[in-house]
Length: 332
Length: 184
Image (cartoon, rainbow over the protein chains, first blue to last red):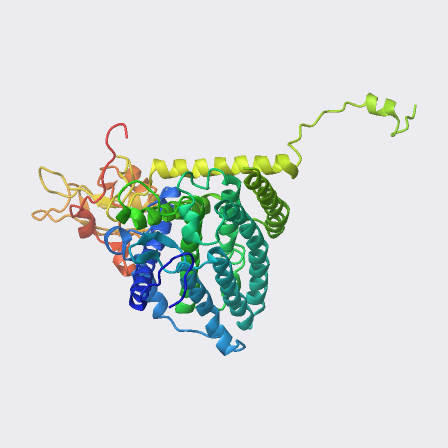
C-alpha cells in the first residue's frame, strides 16, 4: 500500500484497479465523441453541419475514422529508426493516460476517493508526465529519417518548452493560494471562491499556454497542416498517426481537467455529492468548447510571434502574477 | 531660384499631406488591442454558430429553380390531337452554338401522321454532354416544339447515355426539381 497524499487511508488494490478501468473507459468513451463534437462545432462555426452521415447525427463517424486508420498500412520510411519510430506515437499516449490519473472527479466517499490517485506532488506530476509526451514528439520527428519531420519536431520542442515555463508559473499563483500541490486539496480550498476570480490572469495564461501545449490553434505550429505537412507527423500514417491525434484530444481533456480543478472549483457544484463527477466533466467539457471555439476563430501565429508571445508577454505577466499573489498571500 | 531641399523653407513650400497612420505595433497598447481584437473575433464566430448552418443538403434537399430556369429540354405534342409540334425544320440545330442537336426530317405519310406539318423529325437527338443550356433552340423554334425544362440532374456513367433521343425528350419528364414559389 502506498501512502497517498494527505489521505489517512490506503485503498484496496482492487478498488484502484476498478477506478483506473472506469476512468480509462470513460475517457476513451468521451474521446471519440470529442472528435465528432469538434468537427460538428467547427462546422456550425462556419455555417455548415459537419459530419452527419455515419450513424445518427454522425455519431459513428469516429468509428469509421478509426476503421479507416487501422486498416491502413503501417508504413515505415526506409531510413527511419525502427524502435524509436514505433515508440514515438506510443510515449505520448502513455503520458496522456498517466496524467489522467490525477484529475480529481470527486471527493473521498467513505474509503474510496473519486480520482485515480491523489499524488502529494499533484501538479508537478502533471508537468513531469507531460514532459514525457515531448519525448514521443521529438523521437517521432527525429526517428522518421526525414528533414521535414526533424524540423517540425524541433519547432514543436522549442514551442512546448517555451510555454511550459509560463504554464508552470501561471499555476504557481493557485498553488500559493491553496498551499498545496495536490489537486484534491486545491479543489477543497476553493470552497469559498473559485480560483478563477482571484487568479484570473493566471487562468488566462494557463489557458493560452494550454493551447500551445496541446498544439492547438492558434499555436498549432507543430502541425500546421496547411503549410508544414503536419510537422513531426509527416512520415506517420495509419493508426500511428491516429494515436498522435488521439493524444491531442487526450491532452485537451487533461489540460481542461487541470484547469477545471485548479481554477473552476473542480467537482464543486450544486446538487448531491453523486453529481460531483458530472460537474467535473461538465466543467471540462465547457473548457473543451473554449478550445474548439478558439480553433474556429484564430489564425495560426507566425513562429517569431509565437516566441515573442511566450517569452516577452506571457512569461513576464506570469512572473508578475506570481509576485503579486505572493505579496497578497503574505499580507492577508 | 534654387532652394536647398533640406531647408525648412523648402518643406514649407510643398504641400505636405498628413497621412493618417494606425497605432504603432507592439508594446502594451499592441497587446491590449490584440486582446480586444481576439475577443471581437470570438464574438464573430459565435454569431455564426448562433445563426446556424446554411447548408442545403443536396440529394435530400434541392434548391428551388426559377420558372425560366433552363434545364433539360422537352419536346412537345399538341394536347388535343396528340401530334408532335416539331416539323423537322432544323432551325434549332442551326441556332445551336454547341452544335449538339441533330435533326433528320422525313415526309409525313397521310394516314399515319406524326406531326402537324408537312414533315416531321424522324431523328431528333440532343447531345447533352455538349449542350450549354443557352436556350437558343427554344427561341429559334417557330412552333414552340422544344422548350427548356427544369430538370438539371442528368449526370450519367456513360457518355453514350447522354445523347437524348426523341422518345426521351418527348416523354413526360419526371419533375424532380422544386420550383421557386412566388416572391422567393
